[in-house]
Image (cartoon, rainbow, N blue to C red; front, side, top):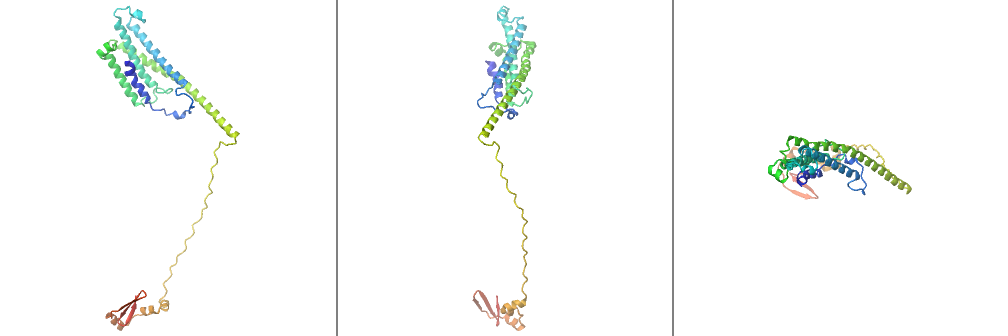
Length: 297
């Protein structure tokens, strides 16, 4: 129970936070009637579980032979004097090997066909889970009262030989699980070929149905717009400024303007200095009488 809830559960949760593989879009779409877990996936999971079981059982048998004087069966071990501590030593080695193997399998299970070194540190949550599992492992086998009286494990009494023997589990799981990926990769390739044949047959069926009903499966051509005629900009008309008419024409057109434009005599200039104030307004024009002479403004 301690193994499942404490050392195995955190890596399992971290696997659920694994980022998607970058090559997922290169795979062909699966039919909607297929189950989520396919046959080759079941085969890979069962094969990896079998590898773990075989490796840990082998480590446990070797530990029994080492600590229990070469005896493996329970009936033979019970005949030994003080057999309980010897049996606890063998169990401790198997427990350590199992936790290490599960931690290694957490990395190998990240992909069905990719090797373990492919983006091995890509999932940050996996690193945290593995560290937590390792801390719990060493607490379980090294804490005096908790390990010996509650879990009945003896991490100190197994010695350096027991810890080295426990390494056989993760090393064996790493090698065998990576070898199993070769079988899974072959199965995945065959499955992708099956999907390709299925899609080709479906496309052919749709094309035949379209041809039977006279429907073209080619998209209609896009209408092309006629090229717009390019016209040169029309030249702007030249603007001519009429020259002001000469004074003679103005005088002929308006006699009063001729009088206004005639230079005044010195006597009239003197009279303009002392004007008689008078003002008359008619038809929008103003006439001011000044010293007997008139000036229209």
